[in-house]
Amino acid sequence: MRFVSALLLLAASLASAAAQAGSITDLSQWRLVEDPPDGHFSGSADTNTATLTASGGPIPSGTDIGFQSVDGNTVASSGAGFYFSPDQSFALAIDFSLAFGTGAGGTLGIGFGIGEDIDGADSAGVAMLTNNGTAFGTFSAAGRVGDSNQIPVPISVSAALEGSMFVTYDALTGDVSLGASQTRDAAVPGGSATYTGIQNNWDDDGLLVSMFLRSQEVDLRPILFASAWQSGDAEAVFSNLRVLSGTPIPIAPAGVAPLPPSLALLAPGLLLLRPRRRAQQPKTEARPRSLS
Image 1 (cartoon, one colour):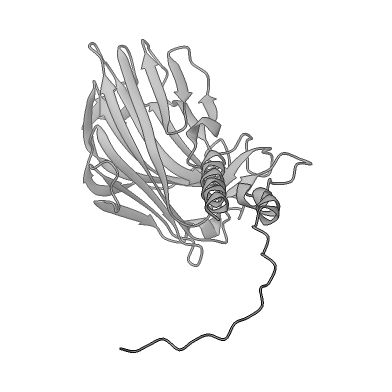
Image 2 (tube, rainbow, N blue to C red):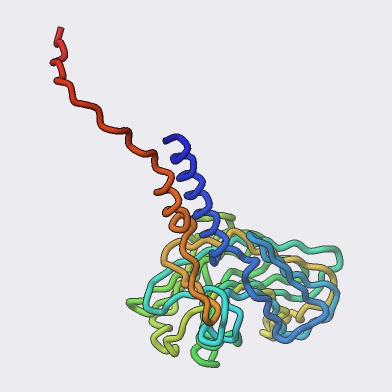
C-alpha cells in the first residue's frame, strides 16, 4: 500500500505540474505583439515574467510592444493560447515594475487589460504614464467601443513604478472595472474605476488578455506637453499573473484533442498495482473484549 500511495502522490504532483504548464499564468506561452515593430523596443518572457524594454530612441508616439494571451488577431483566428468567455465573470491581477537608466527622456506608458482583438477594438484596461523616468499623475481606466475611444477615468491611486493592476469583468451587467495598487502581489486594488455595461456594446466575442509598453506623446497645452519616448533605457517587467476568479479557456490546435490530466493517465496502471487480496481464512468467533 505504501508503494501505491507514493504513486498516487506522484500522480497528483504530475497533474499539478501539467495544469501549471498549460495555464494562462505561464507567460512564456503568450504571443509577443509589436504595433508597429520598432528597433528600439524589444520583449522576452519566461514562465512567470514578461519583460518589455525600450533602448535608445526616438520611438514615435502610439507605438506599442506587448504580450497577449492568444496567438492570433482574435480568439476565433487563434490556434493556441487562452481566453475568457464573455458569458462568464472573471477577475485578474498582475504585478509590474519599471526601471530606468541614465538619460531616460520622454513619455512611456504601461497597461494591462482585456479586449476582442489585437488592435484594441472593444477593449478596456488600466494604464499609467511615466515621463523622464518618473511616474506622474494617477492610474487611469481606458476603454474602446469598436474603434472609438471612451473618456479615460482617473483611478484614485497615484502612479508608481511598481505595484499591481486589476481587471474585473461582470458577465451579468457587462461592467468592466479597472484597478491599481502601489503594492505588489496585492489581493485587492487600492482604487478602481468602472465602465458600466461597456461589454454590452462589444461584439460578444472571446476576450483575450494583454499587457503592453507604449511610447506616448501627451499634448494638453497650455497645461502640459510631454514628448513621446526620446532616449535612454527603460525596462517594464510584468509578473505574478493571477486569476482571482473565473476560468480561462485553452485553445487547442486544430485536430488536437485536449490531453487528459496526468492522474487520469496513471489511474488504470494504479488499479493494476492494487495488492491482491489474500485467500480468505476460516472465520473464528470473535471473543468479546474485556471492559475492565
